[in-house]
Amino acid sequence: MESPILVTGGTGTLGRRVVTRLRDAGCDVRVLSRRSHQDAEHVEYMSGDLLADDGIDAAVEGAGVIVHCAGSNKGDDEATRNLVRAASRAGSPHLVYISVVGADRIPLVSGIDRAMFGYFGFKLAAERIVQGSGLPWTTLRATQFHDLVLLVAKQMAKLPVIPVPSGIRFQPVETDEVAARLVELALATPAGLVPDIAGPRIYSTSELLRSYLRAVGRHRPMVPMRLPGRAARAVRDGANLAPDRAVGKRTWEDFLSERVSAGP
Ligand SMILES: NC(=O)c1ccc[n+]([C@@H]2O[C@H](COP(=O)([O-])OP(=O)(O)OC[C@H]3O[C@@H](n4cnc5c(N)ncnc54)[C@H](OP(=O)(O)O)[C@@H]3O)[C@@H](O)[C@H]2O)c1
Image (cartoon, rainbow, N blue to C red; front, side):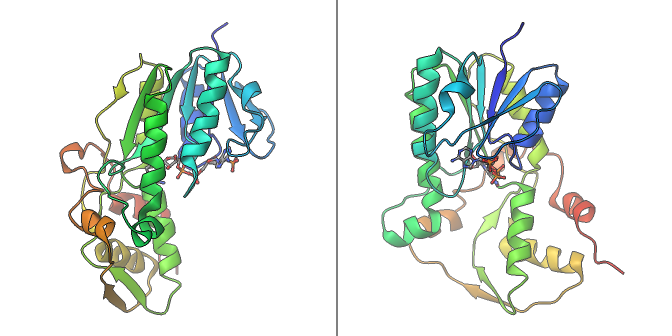
């Protein structure tokens, strides 16, 4: 019997698509989650918490590959350290990590930088833990997922006036295309840091918000807001973009028209 593939964060936006694709490829999948779930065919759920360092040993036991999709705004370094420790105790699984474009290009030198862009620092620290783990590894950096952009647009649209960070652009990518690439990497030999995956087009923040508002049939005034600090400057200079890696196929417009409608 083939060893199972562990997917941390296999209940999340990205991870659940990775789980589906691995299962469809004929793999036995194990999912680590902080909550309990009903097992499904070829998918076993195990309870554990990467930050609390709880339940990880049982989850990694016997896994030949670990696709590490668990994450949040902060603490990805600590969670990854705990995962790597348990994985190394269990053997030598191939560790596949999802990071973010710009992790290595956004300077975090002040409290303001860390307050607004600290996420990128946690991702870089986690990347380094994966790289120095002694395990065979592969890391893929992606730009922001369509689902995340939609979530943020929905939240912003609740405000009577929307503050728009000026000069900041995004290159959103289809989550399922990132999942497909991660599965491809998980089923291949360890490859280290692989070329980024980014969406087909770059948009200003106001373009993204306007297209969302148009799709839901709402109007909101927008006010430009200049974000202070070196991290924001790096992002204005495009540190979060990968124009040379615009390999994503599905556009934001296609995603939006399928997911959002203006209603009757
Ligand atoms: N969203 C983006 O635009 C984007 C872009 C580039 C890279 N990424 C990276 O892609 C990964 C997945 O992002 P996503 O948007 O799919 O995230 P998500 O929807 O918020 O899902 C997060 C997942 O992490 C799990 N998780 C969180 N804290 C955990 C903990 N302490 N212990 C165990 N599991 C924990 C959650 O599982 P339970 O709640 O079931 O425990 C959930 O399955 C993250 O590493 C993120 O940094 C995201």
